[in-house]
Length: 165
Image (tube, rainbow, N blue to C red; front, side, top):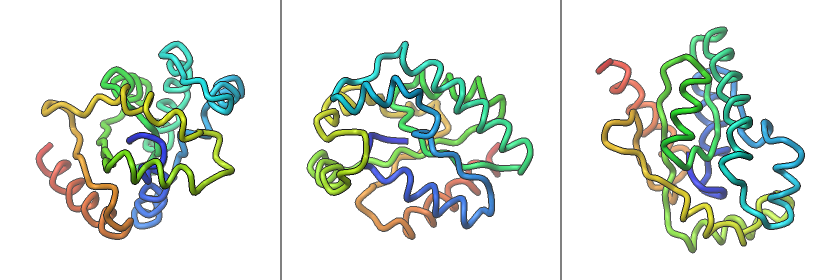
C-alpha cells in the first residue's frame, strides 16, 4: 500500500515471484470512468473507490483461497479502505506501507509518463493517506530502499506476523 509511485507494483512483483503466488494489480480493477477521472487530473472520491475495493478484495480472497496466499498492489490509503478490502476478501490480510519523501515520489511519478496517475494528484494522495494504526496488521517500510531489500524485510515480517497469529 502507499501513494502512487511508492513502489507497490515493483515490490508486489518481487514478493509474488518469491512466494510463487498470484499477483493482483489494484490498478487493473479500476473502472474506465475512474481511470479517465484520474487521467484528467481529478482525484477519486470514496464513492469512486468503494466498488473498486470490493472488486479487488473479492479477487484477492478468491486467489488466496485457491493458492494459499496472494499478493496485491493497492493504494489502500485510508483505514476504511483497508477494512473494505479485508471484508471483501474474507481472508486474513497483512498490509505493507511503502513510505518515502514527497520529492522522491514526485521524481518517480514524473519518470513514468505513460501512467494514468499524474504527479499533480500526489498532494491529494498524501493528504488522504492514513498511516496504519498500531492495532492494524501492518508494517511501514522505507520505499527508498531497494526492492530486493524491501522484499526480504516483508518476508521476515510476514513470517513473524503469521507466527504470532
